Amino acid sequence: MFGNSPVLLAEFLNISSKTALSASFFFTLFVVFVFLYVVKKLNAISNLKKENFSLNSSLEKLDQQAKIILKGDMDLKLYQQEIEVQGNKLNLLRKFISSSLPILNKNQLFLKIDNLLIEKFGFKKGLLLDFDNLEQIYEMNFDSFETKTIADIIFKNKSYLQEKKILTSESEICKTLSARLNINNILICPIKTKSKVYNIFILAGLISSDFIRESTKETFLILCMYLSKCLDNIELFEQIYQTKESLENKIKNRTKELAKSLKTVETISKTKSDFISNVSHELRTPLTSVKGFSSLLADEKFGKLPQEAKKRLEKVVENVDKLMDIVNTLLDISRIESGKIEINITFDDIVPLIKNIADFFEPQSHQKNIDIKIDAPENFNVYMDKNLIERVLTNLVNNAIKFTPEGGQIIISCKDTNQKALISIADTGFGISKENLDKIFQEFYRVKDMEKRAIKGSGLGLPLVKKIIDSHKQKIWVESEVGEGTTFSFTLEKRKNE
Ligand code: ADP
Image (tube, rainbow, N blue to C red; front, side, top):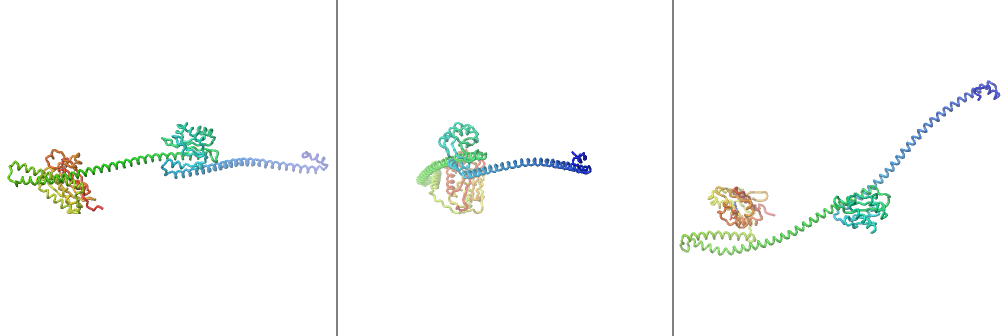
């Protein structure tokens, strides 16, 4: 008001104009100073406001981040809890599996489902039904009305359940059950394989939480899948067991039948041996007498005979000889068979025996221009009844000469194999056809071959040979090619049997 008018100021304050001038000057200076001060403060305030604003936005950001961190922390805790719950359930499953793994019986397996298991799953009630007849197998805290209601609903939805893995509270069936039984939180799981539903497992009413955790659902599903695998295995095992049982029974029955048949065969065989032995024995005496008298007659010891009569008598003597031979061989076979002959096994060199036989047959083989070769070491000790093995060699070499055409060859060999001595008589004769090979050891069997018809024999040589080798508990076999030749081989023990 007085800034531009020091005169007015002087008048107003009643002071000199000089003083007023200087006062006005200082006042103006003061005003300018205040103005500048105010401007500076306003600037500072504006800066402060800006800083405040940026601080606020930073704080907001921090707040948001804190909220995110807090939420993350809560989520993490929830996850941790979930993982812990899942871990506990998996542990529960692991224990259940390890304790039920060796079980191979359905009832025993179902005994493993108990109240503790249901409680550890976090449920108040549990029920296991047979899927076929809906009979109750296991039950916990369900009354009979509830069980029947559940069975009725399952029965109506059988084909639907066959297709399902697990039903939770959101499913129509669980909702219906909840409404009828006034129970919340229900899980229904069919225990099944691809081809068959075995059971229906129901859990209901949670003990502590309000909702069924995902982990609970999954673990329950795993439990039911495991149970179905167990039931499958049990069924398979039962099938195998039954097959094994029936097989064992069959084997037992067959063994009994065989033992019975064997006894019958043994009885028949003994009767036959006894009969042959008796008949042969009875025949020997009259035959000896026939042979004696006919020989004397043929030798004209009782006087000269007409030429024709002498010729016939000589034929009689020849045939009586054959008959005696047959009777004696039959008697030997039946004696060996019935164990009446005492077998006298000694550890002896078989090579001289072979040489003797070859020498013995030399004239016969020479007549047919058949070469007999021996392929044997200097000595070869074996366990044998010398007399009986001599008869074996005699029969086999005799046959080889009989059934080998002129100019052929026979090799008698004696080889040292790993376990045994192997004696073979090989010829380059007519050979034996495949269909006859396994029959030639039968009594009286002779190959009806045209070429061989003219060759005399009784069909008793090889049966006797076989009986002798059997009595040594050794093996004899034949290999042959028609037109190529035949090899008979048998074994003898070279070491004492323990
Ligand atoms: P036999 O010689 O008295 O006829 P065997 O019992 O010794 O009786 O032989 C039975 C049959 O086996 C003979 O009739 C013959 O057909 C056949 N056989 C045996 N040995 C030989 C052989 N080395 N070569 C060909 N066939 C043989």
